[in-house]
Image 1 (cartoon, helix red, strand yellow):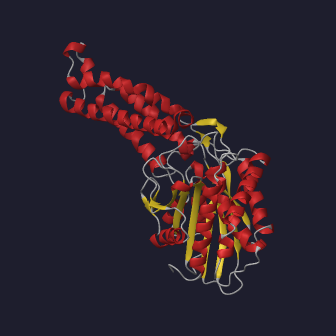
Image 2 (cartoon, rainbow, N blue to C red):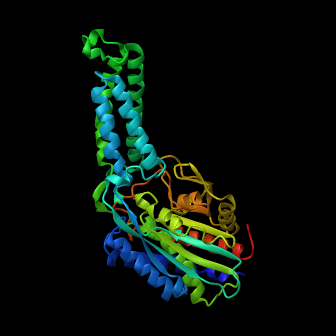
Length: 420
């Protein structure tokens, strides 16, 4: 099928997305993970998918799931406390210092590095929500394309607001270096002195071993380590216009354009899956994959997972995800990349690097679905990311229009049998 007519509506689509996103932000409550506002947005978009996008009513579901959203950044209370304790006991019990730092680093690696539910038990349980909506083709289903975004919004990152991504990531890196520094000097302490601390014998700074003197100089890391307690402001929820109502509305805009033009696909089924609480560690997409395990395996099914579609300079297909640890499906990635290139939409081939986090694509890929993550932001984070600057009046129509056009072209190519 030729969808050029739909592609040409890209400017209309961008304005439609901006208008709808503005409505959600102005109308409903804040959308932190597991909140009433997140549910309100899910219910509203489910209604739009039925009334304005032609999705079949019997397929539209708003499904709840249990989560502990505070745990995703809650690792810092465990890790930073353990690291600061390790620094305090270094001079007396180096073995305990090693144990505390290793445990602290393991917690952050599992909870924040791999998005595991490692300390979820320690935080309040809430209910998040996902939306699933399907538009059936007129004939036999031979392939399926799924558009995904997350409706929740982030807690503000104060350092990113004040200093931008260089300051935010620099702070985190300094803290990591500080923890590893004390781990190394603690191990050296053990090798040189044994388990008995130097202070338990006699001490003057002048006669102290070099590794003890180094540890004193290492106290410069303490303010940074302590500052990491405040890396997230749980009392301020950002509007999340770009991150990630843009991702939610990318698929909605495509389906609405098709309906408005009276275009029905014969053999390609379309679906929109909105997975809540991504900002809590992909909790919604992981719950969706578990709830729908074994489904949608009957025909070739591709997932396009969108996150923060903002700057046209940074439209990117991410071939690796989740801090670089998860591989996306190459055919799905290539389809979107080639579609954008074929209509001269600027796009790059990239990945989500360490400290870059993950769009929901990571959960779909881990669950065995064929998926890719599409982003439109500088991975060297800018000051609107997870801050109060992510507002409906700080959106980029060109970025939205380009991603929409590439999406429709990818749909056209997929409908015509590409990459299956």
